[in-house]
Image 1 (tube, rainbow, N blue to C red):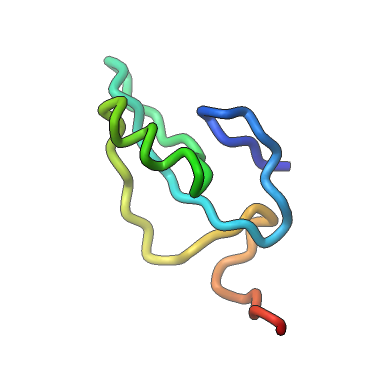
Image 2: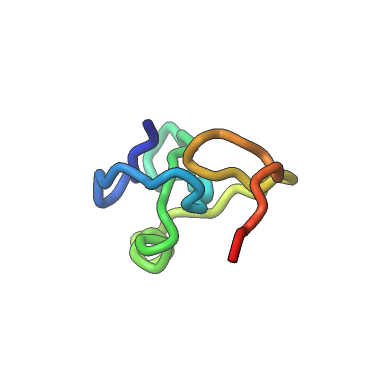
Length: 67
């Protein structure tokens, strides 16, 4: 189960998210859902770049969109 660091919502299977670093003294990468990305950017968080896209079930680039 994956939680958004800002809204604390459980992400659905296949839902996309990105890793962000908080503006704390000790930067830690945290999961932020797509809906909370504007709030994270406004709060001074920085998005960390990852080569692979991830979704809430931890699969990297292996899930296809159907329909």
